[in-house]
Image 1: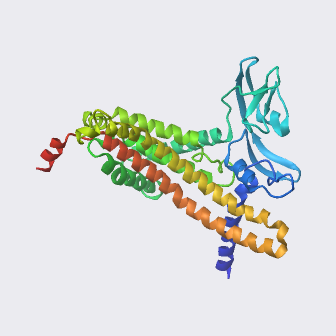
Image 2 (image 1 turned 90 degrees about the vertical axis):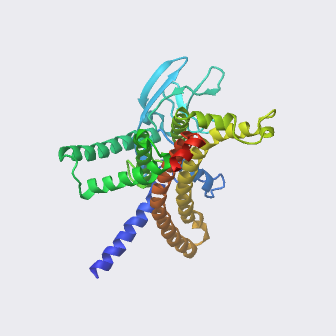
Image 3 (image 1 turned 30 degrees about the vertical axis):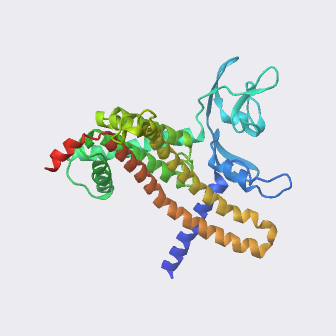
Length: 364
């Protein structure tokens, strides 16, 4: 009987953790339209977006949150540095406020003399930025601890967590990076291993509902954009002469490349679509996972007006499905990090292509 109680207790805890990100990540109660109905769209967008404070929970009528540093530069009043708690509930501080609607909704703005809202230069430590810094520091601590452990024992094989990390690292290095790039893969292994673990730890931390987890870092297109740009730069800097030759003068019939450069144009577009695919794939998959969890949780609020029986049954369905999706998201967290690293390695390997006669000599 005690084992059964433990199982039910674990399920209850997991179910609560599945729903709690929705109830704890934002300072507002469930969004409502003017008619009083539940606004699912606004609710989801608020929770997957960024914010200037880290909301923990609501205790009675009091919001419990961690204010984050606001750092902005105004062309008229200069630099402003203060905590975001000064801007809560529509308050204005030093001529700055958070826009409640319009194209700058949710962003810090200042009003000009004619009453228009303009954006100052904003480098504030938002929720996503704080999570990014925290997760990066956590990753550095983990990797440096593993490296120090091996260095201390003259690189002998390890067990436990350090042994697990060794298996993890060697799996990505030997089964993803090495086959993807081929010869001279060791030059790119540090970057690709860093990318894998950076994406993976941010994905995992995004699934943890309590502080400092729950931030939608890899579901922020600015983050995936920077990762894709770095890969884009490495790919094109590493490009061999044969790689550039196949872009600007591929081995196709002459009428496909002159006088109208049809194939070169397609190849040039392909240079930019590869990093674009990296950016969108990671961003879309991670934000979709968060949105599905939030959408399932919304069933609880949407069915409130349909009676107690309907609301109770849909609450049970919501909790079970949310728990299931969260478990799936654990797998997705690894898969997306794996795919980003694998495609980056493949793109680098394709850029280092050698002339065809070299391949023939190797085969012989």
